[in-house]
Amino acid sequence: MASPLTKEQAIDLYFMEHRAKVIDLAAFLDRIDRASGEPSKDFRISAMREAIALLLDGQSDRARRILELWSDPTENPIDKTTTKGASGTWNR
Amino acid sequence: MYIDPHIHMVSRTTDDYQRMAQAGCVAITEPAFWAGYDRASVNGFVDYFRQLTDTEPRRAAQFGIAHHTWLCINPKESEDVGLAREVLGVIPRFMDRPNVLGIGEIGLNKNSKTELIILEEHIALAKRTGVLMLVHTPHLEDKLKGTRLIMDAMRNQSIDPGRVLIDHVEEHTVPLVLDRGFWAGMTLYPDSKVTPQRAADIFELHGTDRLWINSAGDWGVSDPLAVPKCRVEMKRRGHLAETIRKVSFENPLQFLSQSGRFKITTA
Image (cartoon, rainbow over all chains, first blue to last red; front, side, top):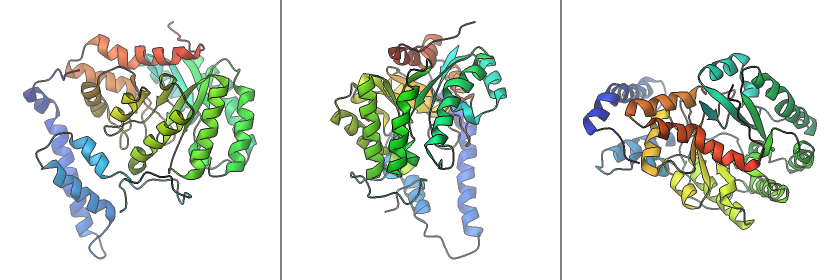
């Protein structure tokens, strides 16, 4: 099922919403810089930086590829759970 | 007019029923899920199943919404195998209630061996009783692996994929699920899962067959009006009214009608 929108219509419809999201992301990274403590080596932020690089590689299917990048790549069930929650990205 | 085929109304106020009815909701289905804490005994589940099969249908009916449900012990509580098996033992007592469509939302959470054992026992129960299944896939980084394990577990018991809805699909799992013949559900959440915009994108990428949208509204950050918001999103892009009706009404109607118990209130 094709998108009913032209490229120009898609930009007109969604630019402001996503402009705000880009600034939010920038402000989030700035916030971490300003926070106290040592420079962060948190695996989630590393994964986010990898995803940002993926956005700029010129290829399509970005949403699918970011979700795959952040997914557990293993195949077998784990022996036992240690938490009920998820982190948002796979901790390599 | 729309159907929300996955919402946890035990966690919502009566105001939400009213607002959903005003937005055009005529029917919902409510899978059994985790309450936010582990229940202490099987009696907690017995009370919950009474709420799902007696209290909620009456609350929904006040606003002309037909209420249906699915029963199980959620994977978040299935690490305690003894408790899980006790719950599996009481489910058949409730299977004859008129609003019970099948077993759900079963599935995996952290993809553990124990979760998989209890999932397999739920699948066996559904197969034995000939009912539909509604399946939860894990969150975030665990979703891709868990979706594959779940589909393999279904295949191992020779389950007809046309009678199973695999929920919470996203861009990386929707083609896997549809290609293996299952139905797929997209959950519209503000922060996790998919937004109404991404759901509309996924319809454009993968078509509208065997694919539906739901709010999965619960006690967390969620929106019981997410389905009508996605309908508005599709409309503003210029999708046809018949396309919007298919994904938010006809598709859930087609899948759920296989139960023989799904009813719509169209007062």
